[in-house]
Amino acid sequence: AFPVGSALTFTFSTNNSNPTILQATPSAAAVLADVGNHDYDVTISDGTNPVVVFVRIVVSGTAPVITSAAAPTQAADGGTLSHQFTATGNPTPTFAVTTGTLPGWATLTPAGLLSGTPALGQDISVTVSAQNGIAPDDTEVLVITVIAGVAPVITSAAAPATATVGTLYSHQFTATGTPAPTFSVTAGGPLPAWLTLTTGGLLSGTPAAGDVGTVGPFTVTADNGVAPAATESVTITVSTGTSSGGGGGGGGGGGGCTTNSHGINWLTLLGLLGVVTIALRARARRA
Image (cartoon, one colour):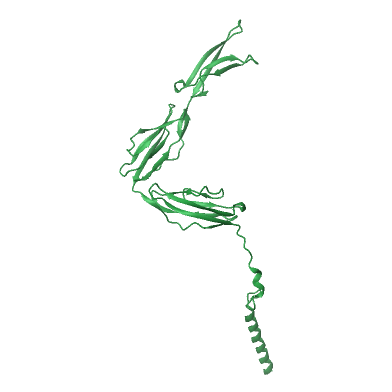
């Protein structure tokens, strides 16, 4: 089978090193109309005994399959809508609205880019089809409600400024806004290999010994298409986490109180011994 876009016209010949093998050399491109079976009777002759060989060449195509994530269901008034449809198939599929009509603010390119500046009262309710001439088309029902947008505000505490080698660093960014904001690094990146930020706002990773030093400053942005986006500057200092020691107790500290292995203060212990001594003397006198 030969896919659409491959060569279709063939020159038949025998293999010079093995005359029992029939070769077919393509020399022209197939088009969509060529999809199907192409049958040939090839006559092979040595000049005395002709032999007819039946040859079938199949030109095939692959129906489209939409592979992109689902489009958003909400868009903010005055914000930005951008969604890229993708699909597999041979020939390469193109995209079109096949049911309903897009509002004036939205466009869909044949390459699958849906974009525009949403306006209140102009929702989207259409069917988008991926087509390449091979049945069946693949479709996606697209329903997007335009809502009054609220700009993002980051509500989480500041990200921790320190990280320790071998210990998980984790911070969850949160933000209010309509639609729900997503998070990304918009300046000072890219992040080092050990550190990642999800669109849901989780900044995490475990640094190794080779990561000791300073990361950043970098900017984390919460955005939902409604201006202005919210930002936070983050700087993280990575250290080994080892202490420099505590001086070993300071050699007694010049008479400060200490405790024995049972946690009793030595002054208290001496006082108790004194009480016992007095009690023993009192008994001796009475005797």
